[in-house]
Image (cartoon, rainbow, N blue to C red):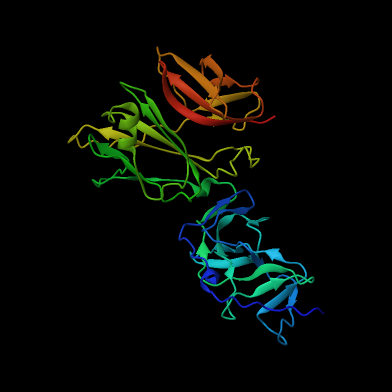
Length: 371
């Protein structure tokens, strides 16, 4: 075996480990995978991981400060996958690995722990790496603390148990879904798991107005505490919640990388959560209970026709319905006569069906067409 001489550098300043910026690591969750999308800043220039090699005579017998490598591997972070337990703790289930992708995972909440490479200075000076020809390759990497953690991500599609909200009534009364005029209407969204795509829409039910406002799709972490519906409505409509009107809330939470009915082949499509509240005249003491049953689409998924169950159109008023695809494009617009709709011309897929009363959106439901 060729003898390799270890060169000792006089100036050690250049060999000090690079400082790691304290920026947040990041990951995204798919249908069955977790992928690291960002790591804290680090410098791996000229660093190699000791995958298959050995220490050899580098001027001294069994010098541990010199390494010959058969198959050097450029240094990258080392990743460990952790899964959240039912008790809220974390269990490490995979790693160490140099791959930033963990696949074939079951539904659950995960995060990735990582260690970053720096020069191995256990000899007081960086350990040099050579190949079998005696050529200098760089320096051996080490992975000291600290550990860095990504954000929590949820793998798999949402189901009905993953989403929900409750109304917050700051003036306690027997019915927490009624509000005095001028009282802020808020919802607590902590019942929803922290996926990264969510939707909020508000439907106004007469008698004077039947307006609609969609807060739209939001990419990013789902709010896990309070949403102020009064502020959202007033900024969107330019008006406040009206007395003697009821308002229906449509709430949807999805995994943007595993959307129901798109990446995840779920015939049922989105998991919508609905609830409604009523606004009373201030000081009236009114506490009406919830009105009639929620309007549903039956059957859903549908093949040729779908019925608006529990829908009771008012006499003398004009109704129509619109169907939008997932890109927001209007694909059907028809006058509504009765409660049964012909959807036989729609291709298989997921849609949003909106019913309008006198030109104002009255309700919106997810519609799935199966062939």
